[in-house]
Image: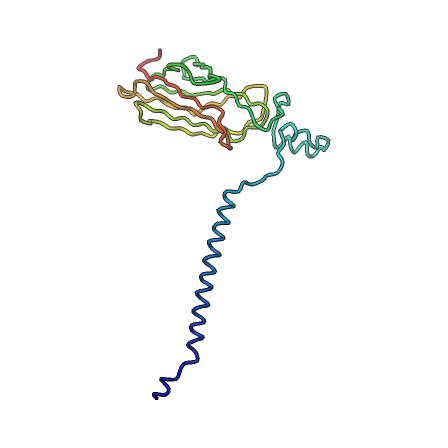
Length: 224
């Protein structure tokens, strides 16, 4: 029996070799995982090459003799005023005015400054009144995709309101577009009255900004 205990086992080296192989495999897999992660990170940072881009005018003029393609483009792009189509890839969106519409009153038409912010108090609203904002804007050169509206309002440094709305996608045309926001109601009461500051922005799907203005307005007991 003692001789059997003292006899070296033929299986122990194989067991050690197996453990060593598992360790090597595990180490190899870990290194591979790290390498894969680094590759994935590189892919995230790497910009996708979409190939050559064409202006809207070039797109419309390509294959213009192919009737089926022409009809497909008309269906896809809608009615486009060729006089407003430019030679650039970037659309031009120009905001012309803001109208404040409230039932029983004439529309308050406010021109939007081409550069900078409105000077002083831009407008006054009556407390507890229902109103709608309507923006008038023009699109030139190319299609603007996914135009979005955001508006943030502060009073005495505290944010009191934030609005976001998808406006849509618009083709270039000579006639201005108008977009009316959903009806809203001004707050009422002693603490609601006073001066507010606001920031209005319009951006597209590519985060390009077409309007970014800061202004002040009042809420008072009655219209001025």
